[in-house]
Image (cartoon, rainbow, N blue to C red; front, side, top):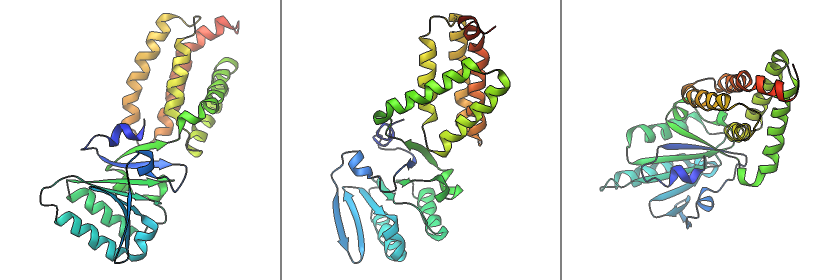
Length: 250
């Protein structure tokens, strides 16, 4: 999912953007005009009711920044939406994170967007209130993703069920380890399977229905690794008979 698809909505949820680079510039990504403001040791970018803070500068004078944000909130007599962006979000004290949590929970017209390179930097009470988006610049890496999909396809063809489980588990684990968009891989892989003439139509219908059902489980699961493994296993059971016939593996 692209970040813009969510943020373009005025009343979007709180958001955590996981990105490979610590200095991801959300204003540049969204093509928002930004203006640097420096005042009384406070430094931030702004564009109308949007405020972008480098959390590494923020935490050096946390009290001043907290006072600044409180002033913004309390002088907002019209209750217009205020958007607080925190980037370079790493090595942040629990004290500061609990303040951000407070703002998220008790000020309904404030929307928080956190940009970080690792989920581990964020406390659970913030994670639980946020919509998670992984930014992997997929458009620039189609060949890279095609290679991964080719590897997965070869596993389906060459492996019996026992060895398949072992190898697909490693694939899923490494997508999380290296911050690869596994959702994109699964969608692209399924589309490739649907294009294969040798896979029976009834198998394709079953595949679509089964994946749709598993999408819900993925959204509510606390252990997404297991759900993603299960998705690949379900695909195996559905398409393996067709692969066996086509590649004469029986």
